[in-house]
Length: 267
Ligand code: SAH
Figure 1 (cartoon, rainbow, N blue to C red):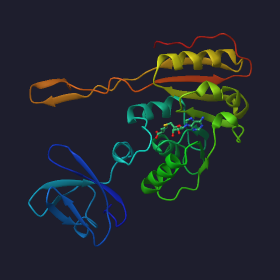
Figure 2: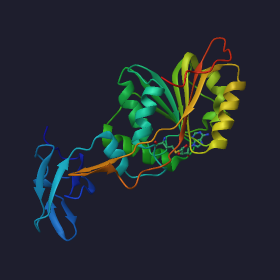
Figure 3: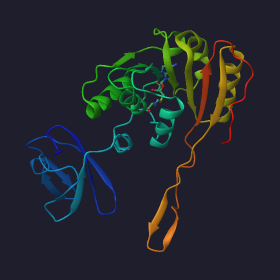
Figure 4: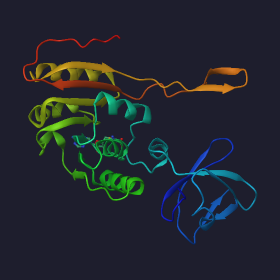
């Protein structure tokens, strides 16, 4: 599919460095003193080579969601793609689901959820900061265009979840234990609570509150690592650097009558 006026694209140089731009007919892109008219990029195939005025070559691509998230303007720190991918399966986000999330931050998780629930589903975001909310809505519109299945409430989620029969609740905020009473009311039975927390004291607190709520079972906590590898001729080894820590995921199921039950961790 050819690249269109108005869309966001990435230019990638021979070293794999990525530069983002929004295509606008009549404009000129500049990079290290070299230029290319946007009109020379508009209309080419996704994945084409383009050459700047001084001879620099770039591959031009429509970014994947993960690539877009790593390059989009950020207000708050985003959830990294390795964790977004994990959240989709561990919170079991499915087409048609009603998903509530907080806070919206920069919108990375929101976009991931919106794509996964599809237009038959619904994503409801809660956010306390207007500046983050505005930035997130712009980021979402730039990548997904106009979406009809997203709702934003500008309020503290712990003070009330307006929705009920919620299928999944995903929390990326510092004090998710404050939201547990509302989660108990809003989630349907069989529904899933997932929190994303950077530190161990936070994880302990949320797990204790979930355990004490009398509504949740199958509570599990884990983290994921993505270790990139270098594969070049005989140099086949892990890359020298990696993102060593992002956050811990805690997942719990809302049950009719919770009993003390440990999830099977291995296998
Ligand atoms: N998941 C987002 C990043 C969220 S950063 C992303 O992937 O882009 C955490 C956000 O939670 C911040 O925007 C913060 O303002 C918001 N927040 C913190 N406490 C909150 C609360 N009690 N209710 C709603 N939003 C809250």
